[in-house]
Image 1 (cartoon, rainbow, N blue to C red):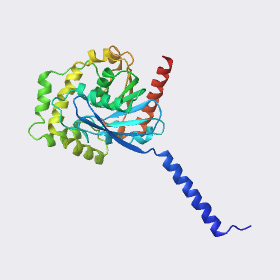
Image 2: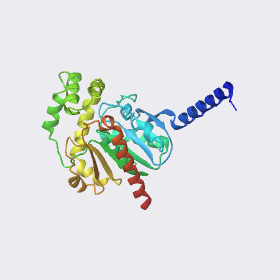
Image 3: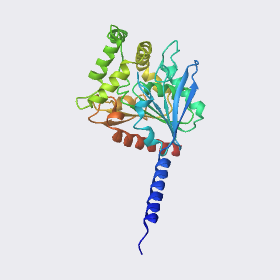
Image 4: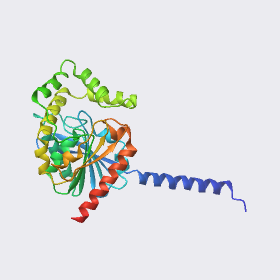
Length: 297
């Protein structure tokens, strides 16, 4: 029996409708909010998905939450996912008297408390690593693990005041040009996508200079005190690092026995953007390890 064109058209339309609805279900909606940090600075964040543990993503120096765009939809399929703009970055407030890692940690704590999260993995890229460590020290309840992207390769490395001052002095004559040069020459490999290099160079060089310099000093202060800081940390740390610089896992475990390192080849500092599929797989593996460890306790 021949099917009429009307029936065929109706069936095709129904299939398209079902597929469209399914696609919408598979793409969690995004909501936005504001938390107030301990010093009164408004902190912007976005939320999508559902499921434990909640994954809280924190960007690096002079960046913003958009740098996690290849991770947020992927992990929102199975988790509540939160991305934060630290104070002085992205859409968050600028009115902070002193830029410290402790205050960045409080930014994260403010969002965690506002959303009433109780089982959490904190993820930080670069400077976001120290920020999530400080958050976990201030609000350890429910934090089952930390993931740091391309940072903390050597807990024992120290930086003299002369080095820090000299590094900051190189930024002073023309801050935007100096940051562009640093990003292009130090944070990528010869195989990196030129369009990505250009985009990040433009972004980071456009960030507020006062925030950038204050955050650099805070970062070096944190690193010089890192061996003491991590001894107070309850949650384990896993670094997903580029192989551009060696990660001294055995050295780091002297101070943080649960430390792990997972290494990516052929990428620069922004490994989660240069090879998102590999990064996401390693990140997913790490979450499962943390969940298994938490279940044993």
